[in-house]
Length: 259
Image (cartoon, rainbow, N blue to C red; front, side):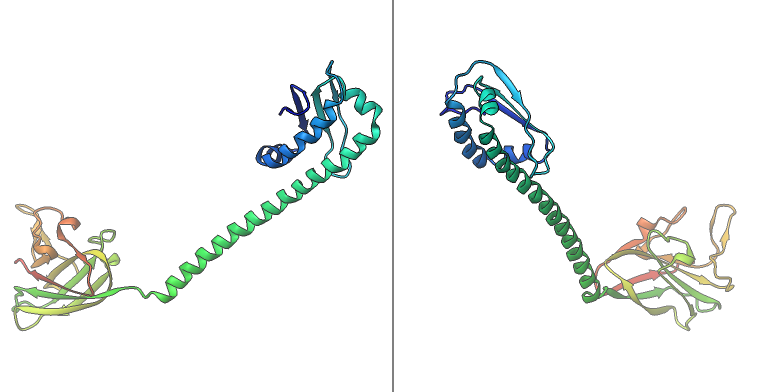
């Protein structure tokens, strides 16, 4: 920066301290207050040569500080007027010391702010987990076209996409006695929603817990079966085609069995 009221065309100073540079750049008001002071000191001398001096600031914790001034008078000024330079050192030392303490305080405040935000987020999640119960729906399933002349059981399995056609991963699995009429009402409780599900139903006539298949002349179930969404597969069953969105506390699905 220049010192307009001193007649000095150029003046620069460099401080070997990481804190002072951003302090000077960010706090323009403080630098503007310093300019007239240095300007008055420099204005009483003639400009001749460039010189560099390296006083330290013992009371600030700054090991080295250097001034480069394009003014011939500053060098003899510093050499001849030791008292004036000694008066400047404590002042600049206090500035640097205060900024270093401010930096440490800012780091502490930043850490405290991060911890507070994390604590607030954890508290909000805990409150939500405790105060907002999970939503569960009752699914009303009607199975139709049941062959009442066969024994065994009716197998009902509800799947999400991740567990599709893996009985051990079914969201709901139940085996029901064959009724004496061709339709049966089943209530499937406590299904979490909103979610997408698909239902598989088959008449396990021989009670072996699997849907028996025939392979000639082409693969097809040997036992009556049905899927949700009125889906009839002609190859490996597709979850998307059999799926439905459970988005209400009560939902009804009808599945006719195909013989």
